[in-house]
Image 1: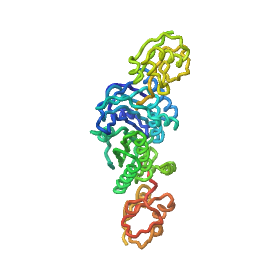
Image 2: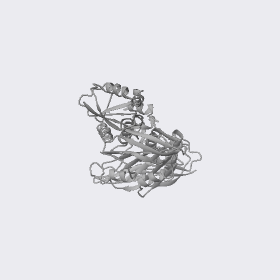
Image 3: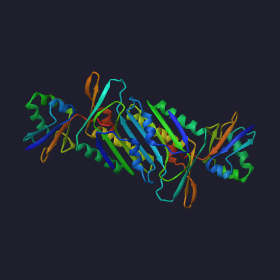
Image 4: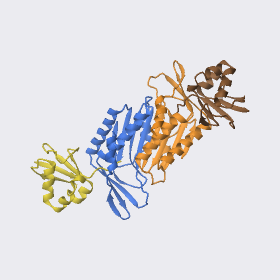
Length: 146
Length: 146
Length: 83
Length: 83
């Protein structure tokens, strides 16, 4: 159970390898990686602001709740802040469990709550100016699934 | 859209990096990795048998159906065969999509169909002899979700 | 009482500063917001639609009816968009 | 007609070989299974519970009622356990 909030990029493969290293009790490992998407070619940077202190506490609480709900071997959340370029990794979650259903559900749960309960805000800087990304109603609605 | 059936291990991080390399249209990347689990310490090897030819065709068809159902940027299935040790990687699927829901659902779908429709069979070799792993009724039932 | 008030994202931009210390006798979050709005236009603008603003008390999500008793830090920000 | 018949997992182990060519006039998978069972005990044992056996015709999943017209390769195996 680890939470990291950082400016620098992370090595997805290395993080997943580390999660399972030396263990034989994991049957299923699910990862989600969020990337800076730019369909139009107009995005110059995606800026991520967060609330230091509260961010770490909120992510740790989301992870602890996932661990209470599912039989997990381990889990991990890494989220970056600062300016990011199109194609860059924004964040990742991973869930390791004996069985695939728990690993899938836990990773999905972590993402749903991270989206709407962890204090991050995105600002898109484009060729025509900057604009804060608006939260989607879908994202709030997604929490009711759990 | 790639399918690989191979004896040798794969580098999960490298595969995921390759999937997104040079692209800026992916927003979400979900991976599932199946690992050889040994809770009791009695497993000496997990042997994977498959049906060469049919395996590749079945996996390609499952992947094609996922691509028809969801707006995916790309997807990948790698499955190993032969004798594997506890803790080793058995297989992986990955789904890349503009949005997280499609990536999660497609990866989950790939796994459900791979489990029950791709011709692989597992045999557990333990300190007390060998035994074929039985298919779970749950796995067949899981297909009805889609 | 003295409160550390912190702002994020467009709330921060509209108010024009990330953090300030406020001397207030407000009993609830809503009362503090009313006091801030009365101060200056930029506060009034930032809080003109409170349905678009979230609040955290000592780094825990809360709501506008919550009492401020014992609170040391209050944060205002838009709905979160991480991930 | 000549059919390549292939076996996997415990079906292969019970029958004792992975592949053979069979000369048959069976019209359906079920008829072929009946012919095989009549041959020897090891076939009879392998197919004693056909609800536990799956069949593929020319590498596509099929069922026991399917006709064998035009089929070149038939495979018998237990329910799959990949992943």
